[in-house]
Length: 397
Image (cartoon, helix red, strand yellow):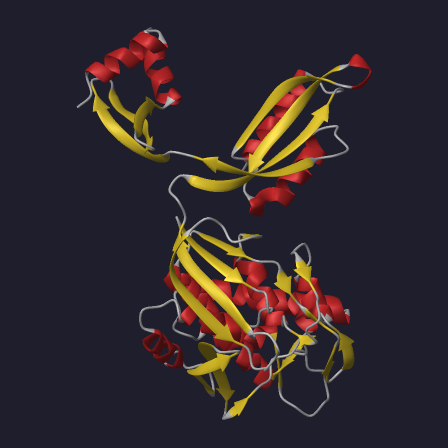
């Protein structure tokens, strides 16, 4: 499993993410040439060697008609300030005209909509009313497009990021002096582990926060992986600490991943109601749902309902638990699981084609016919499941 881990110990910005990810490619300069060939109006992108606290990495520079914009939280442009400004419709028009794979175009627009939603929440406006300063808009489009294209080329199976260092103090923008993290950034980082510290300044920008929110599968410590490439994306500011975002690409050990276990106890539900709740959880994307009989307060018999799910599905699973059970509390545990690699094959038999699941790994290989296919044949031939399986195994072709 290919894992991308991003160390955000000095925050995250669009240019830092783009710079770090380009260093993971075998030919980063060719990638930058591809970016410039996209034809974002008036935009020129380049990667430059940069050193922060003795560490050499890449600074990703974006100029718009020869001017480099300092990315801050203040993308939004008020009406009537004397500058050209673009709404989300104009941004969608620009992005739709770029020669991008369909998936990358969807990613770019989704990230920009997150930015617009954040600005709308902060300024109390509908997304359709949000307008962005022209230079800041094109600069953000360049950074976001670069990161989305890089994620498409790197194609990680899982993206993990550390908790995000947001900085401290205040930041100045056209609207005045605001606290760090700036309001739009704070909104985008909801439910994401963040922290401040002694470093003064805005370490995480709205663009960086939106990209992390969109692409990161889960936040936490560096997972177990065999590192194959490391990239350093340098920030603009010189700080006492190395101002960089580090990206590490590697392989996780086969058959090993992390899942969440969500649990709740109930003692006032019928068996039918519990069964229905389990069905809805499976329909919602749960990896596994099972029950265990337990003893509860006042010696009442009850049921422990446990759900296994991916981190990105947690909120949906919790909502389903509260909706379809009588529980008033849900417990969460992160666990590591070890699984065999699985694939599905279709085999020919005298009774027609039958699907068979083959699992392998850790020196073990086993196979199993799909129950639905076995049951169908058993009913048609008036056989038991055991007789049907024995016959199929002896007559596979």
